[in-house]
Image (cartoon, rainbow, N blue to C red; front, side):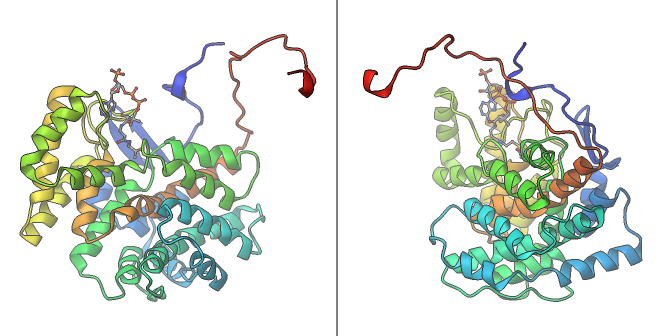
Length: 370
Ligand code: ACO
């Protein structure tokens, strides 16, 4: 047995949803650059679930379904009000999403049609949950979803309690397109492992949220913002990053298991960060980020990943740092559920082996003799 630490380079599933070949990311054969510039998040989610871009009628139906399903059970809101106010937002999201299954009579219906409906429902409900969590933590009442609004618009509306500006809606929508799927990343793999036991879709998404929470995966965007806050000013970038590199510490938002020549999503977020700064008349966060990139790429050869510039983008959308990873989950639930549907279609339990490195030939000793 040869152990491949971190399963690096191991091909563990066949999938027709997204691919990374020679540094190019595609969803169902569409280049991410094309989708980021032209597609809405709703079109992207449809593409991931059903394999082709929607017709006008299909898109209208999906938008109606997302709107109709956006409300969450009163019991889940009541539960969220019992969570500690300063609990980790991803832990709270994980619990709330898991609870949704308790109020869905079709939770264990394993038919394709029932699972497709649950995928759309989860997608519709996750922004409502994240916005409600954010408001409850601030002592505010959750805001009910706005019928007919796009997913990005509705999320910002429920979060802020007022109609968001269209610049913010567009920026968030593009961010959601960019984060929607990413081949066999850690959280998607976790989802597929869970449902490959023929467990339900809610269990798969709950597992995925747990995996996304970690700072080596989705949690990195929050860690990037924490670092920018610690740095505090443009002038402090150089000494701060130099000291971190000298101590051989990791710089969050850099490096990637698959992309060694740069993450194709990062340039879109970088552009958005610059544009949002220009609109606000304050490009400090963008300038600091560019300086960090120059130093880290210059000295370590590491390029920014999707999480690096998303931190300054979301902050410039007046979104609190603790919501960054939950927003990643709002987008990625489309990819997770697409992968879950695909896993069910051609399932085999995922059960690898481990090389045993522990003690051997031990004999049981009664407790009073140890
Ligand atoms: N800062 C400094 N050094 C780094 C960084 C970083 N961000 N990333 C990798 N390195 C170094 C490692 O220390 C290692 O150096 P060594 O060979 O001298 O020990 C070398 O580069 C290879 O890195 P690995 O950790 O082996 O790369 P791996 O493929 O296992 O991990 C990962 C990839 C987890 C993304 C890593 O680059 C990392 O921790 N980055 C920071 C966290 C982050 O931004 N995560 C988000 C990833 S994107 C996403 O999930 C959405």
